[in-house]
Length: 200
Image (cartoon, rainbow, N blue to C red):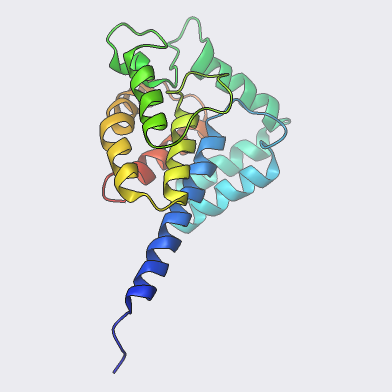
């Protein structure tokens, strides 16, 4: 008969699970930054394909591979797509990846939600290294979740997801589904949804 898991084994498992979540958050944060050659290239795309394969998302994997095969320059293609989707998209709708746009009622950046997000970071021992983006940009929020998971702070992680991340992300995702125009970002946002749900 096998012995019950010891408290040390259980702690090791929790630490490993937290580290895995932290790595996933960090990876997903990269997919939502403006594409730069320093991180956006074959290794990122290969890792994304590997993740889709491990999840059994065969349709999404096929679409992503098809895009890579057909794109003469994936980096330039993603830069154009990022700009169209998240920065400026006339005549179509732009989908700014900032919580305040969806939560503060006036569709503007740097609102009350930005302040609440920045305050939450600081209350839990973190701050922005560089303020090139408002604190409530999706990639910064994912980086913050990665930091919490990496330090095995599940209570703070859950609190942030429940009170600050999921409320705006669900609105953003709903609008994105209506406007989705690129397979890379469609897959990235579906993965973010999967790995930030409360039961994960």
